[in-house]
Amino acid sequence: MHATDSTDEQLLSARDAASFERFYCRHVESVLGFFARRTRDPELAADLCAETFAAALASRHRYRPEAGAAAAWLYGIASKKLADAQRRGYAERRARRRLGMERIELSDDDVARIARLAEAVEVRALVDRLAPEQRDAITAHVLDERPYDEIAAELDTSEAVVRKRVSRGLAAMRRRMGVRR
Amino acid sequence: MSQDFVTELRLQLREAALREERRAPVRRRVAHARRRLPGPAPVAAALAVALLALAVAVGVVALRGDKQPAEPKVVGTYPVASSLSRLATASGAVWTADPIRGEILRIDPATRRVAARIPVGAEASVGAGAGAVWALAGDLQYGGDKGPVRLLRIDPATNRVVARLPVRAPGGDSLGLVELQIGRGVVWVVGVAGALRIDPSRNVADRFVSFAGRAGEAARGAVTDRDSVWVLAVDGRLRELDARTGDPVRELRLAAPADSHLFPGRPGTLTLTGADRITVLERASGRLLWSNTLAGEIRYWFGEDDTLWVQASDEPALRNRLVRLDAGSGRRLGQVDLPEPGVAGIARVGRDIWVAGPGGKIVVVRP
Image 1 (cartoon, chains in turn yellow, blue):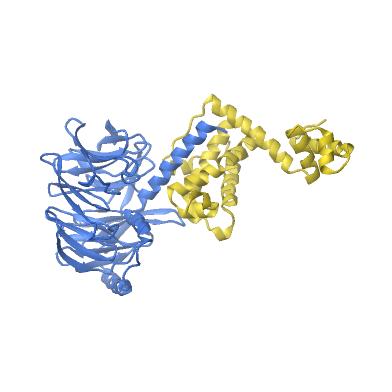
Image 2 (cartoon, helix red, strand yellow; image 1 turned 30 degrees about the vertical axis):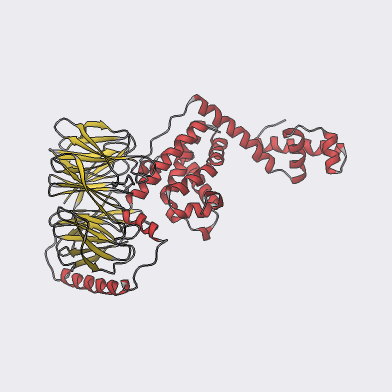
């Protein structure tokens, strides 16, 4: 089976090193962003990301495709690691120790990139959680920087309606970020 | 994207995944390769019934009230390196390798500290015998497909590499996944494609016994000694080959289960391991001596004159046990839970059994 043909579930069930590596490559950015967004601490996010994939590697034999998507299984591990870290105040190293993995020291560039990843992922996640008409309007105007009139024409509505959708969408995002006006 | 961190983590996970693969006996990978081959002989079921009957008989004998030795116990756990591989003993020291750092390690058994590091720049696996310490080093992960594999001879008096021999078939082909078998003054590098004999007096490979055409595409293990090479073929036949000429001497139909793999055993015996079963045969006749089934997957074992130490892993519970068996009868003599996951190597060190883990620690078990 070629790598590009394989589903997450197939990669995880294959149990060979190459398949797990492909599974890792598919999900590492989103998992890193998941932790970066929730911890606001690049070092902790990197630790949790490494521990999550180590735990996934160590316990992949317990994954059963019939029980759900592999990504959901991975994020289940990630959520547990995050909860553990919030309770302990640090990321445990159990899975990495078991596998003989060393802690990775982050460079300044790593720290900056993970912080940026958190911000980018957060904005995208907030946008994705908006109502569809607000999401389309904000994506078009804020992210794609297109003018209101062009968006209105494309959506077959008035410019005022687009402005209102953008305004309400941004307000909803501010509320979810905990920002008060 | 945090490319450097992501890349470093990727490499670490790759190494860990490959170590996990290697921790499982070679038989798994060979079995994987065999999936494309025709299935095993159907008479495997008959052997399974026979083995079951023997296991029951062994159990009955065990219930007669023979005195049990004391249960083994863990008396210490010591961090040594970031990771460890097979263990060997020679010149009053314990030898192993750190596959992550690419170093061969000499450990002082008294202090349990690393007394010397020999950088080899690659993954390595050690063995001892024939007057030296030997190490396979190089692309052990892919059996030489992605880089060379060399056999290093180390002088334990100086801790220096004194000879480097290429590990390949006479035609230049890779031997596939390889292991060292050293005994009776002879060094063999055994792969799935064939066995390369090393003359330790000259540090040269002087014989090659190919398994092609005899064992199918991939042998399910081979056992060597001075005069013979035994090969378990993919069709379940056990063939004895003349170590000098490679010619077949005789053939036995074992009808071994498909997941069986052949390993060296006590002198005069051959050992077959299956998923949770270990079986010992008499070399001279191929006669079944005993068979025993353990609760858990057999992942590693180490033989002494009178004792077999077998790592059995209960994966769902992640329990990792070291089981002591009587080498003559297969009777279970005791067991101990290991505090560290996985086993990369086992050796007798003084009165203790040392168990090296892939996590870089040595667990000391007192029998």
